[in-house]
Image (cartoon, rainbow, N blue to C red):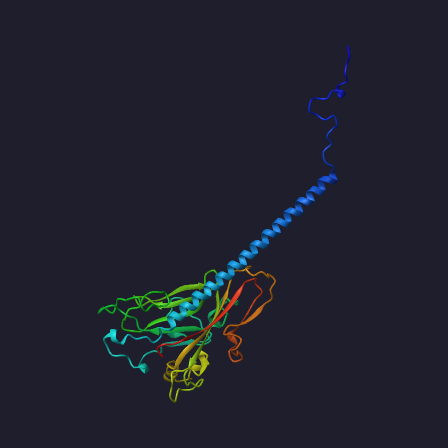
Amino acid sequence: MIRLHPATIALPGASARHQTGLTLVELMVALVIGLVVAAAAVAALLVARNGFTTVDSTAQLRENARFTSDLIQRLAVQAGFEDVAGRGFSVVPPNEKPPAIQGFDDAILAADTDPSGLTDGSRSSGCGGVTDTSCLNGSDILLVRFWGTSPGADPSVADGSMINCAGIGEPEGTELATSVFHIIRSAAGEPTLACTYRDTSGAWKTMALVPGVEAMQVLYGVDNVVPGTAPSGTTDSVPDRYLRASQLVVSGDSAATLANWRRVRSLRIGLLFRGPVGAAQDRAATAATYNVLGDGFSVSADTKSQLSVPADGRMRQAMVFNVHLRNP
């Protein structure tokens, strides 16, 4: 009988050569190559994500700027409107009613507050312990006054053609409707364009409009007004210079101050919008200074029109536009 040694028996389909696996060097090379490929994939994903975030933030900034400018222009051209034919009573003489346009320089207004107590330069003290640009941004306040309209004999019903800054129709009523544009600091710490208006009960209400509005500066195109001086001479309804709100104030003479405000013929409004943290491509961007009213306007006499922002990785966009008032 012939006996075969077990080591010499080959099973069908099996190799006679023993499988020895991978060496340690081969395994390490494979791991390194895998890590390089994975790192490249992650890097490409992050670049794509950052690019998407930047594009999305840019689009949002532009949309916020478009909406804000459209809203302010829509409301500002209503300033001084009075439906003489529809109101059914005599027109109030201009020198006996509040000016259609009025503003305050570097001022702050608390939510749901009557704007009659506003003063220039109140923003710094009104910000309390907040020391960043979400509150300390030198922003101005703009008041727009106009008469509402009603479809019939009932002056308490609005026809919707004249709206306040909250988008609510204002009826004729017995007093001027007022829309107040100002910058507030939201509960989340975000600077926000807000509007304050009077509701049907007569209470003042504040509504947030556009988040991320870091600063608002307003200049007033006036007709024959000298800064800090009571008005004199004739007017031609054409603005001959732009002044800050504080320059229309005549010290110790409220009547002359109101008379200066009645000579406002146009507005120049500058806004600075900001996006979320980390939206900018250059995360290490240095701090910057923005001329909110545009580089063509001197800021030597109004340092608040310049805003210095930190290197916080946010995208920012400045916008400046003019509004010609129809009812001076």
